[in-house]
Image 1 (cartoon, rainbow, N blue to C red):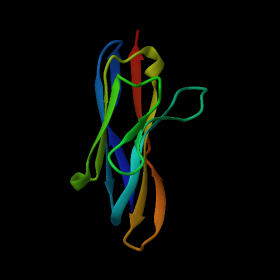
Image 2: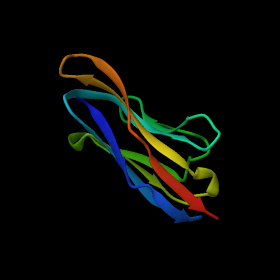
Image 3: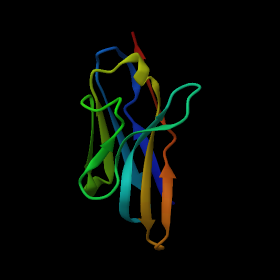
Length: 120
C-alpha cells in the first residue's frame, strides 16, 4: 500500500508563516512528480506548487515570492514553506504525487489534506 501523509497545518495570523510536510510511504520505486494543491470553501481544488520532474518547480501566480516548495528525495518528502500568509490562503492543502510502485504500476496519490487557516 502506498500513501501520502501531510502535516504542519494550523491557525496563523496574517503575515505569519507555516511549513507543511508530506511523506510518501509504501512500495514506491520512484516519485515522478510531487507537490501541493489547495481547496478553499466553495472553490475548486487548485495547484499551489509542484515538482513535475527534474529540479524545477511550478507555482501558482498567487503564491510566487511567498511560498517555496522543496523536497528530500531520500526521505520521500516534499515541503511547502509558506510566508507572508494572507486570509486568501485559507484552505485545505493536499499533497499529490505521481509514483511508480514496486509492481511497476504508475499511480496518482492524494493525501487526506491539512487545514491552513489564516486569521486577519
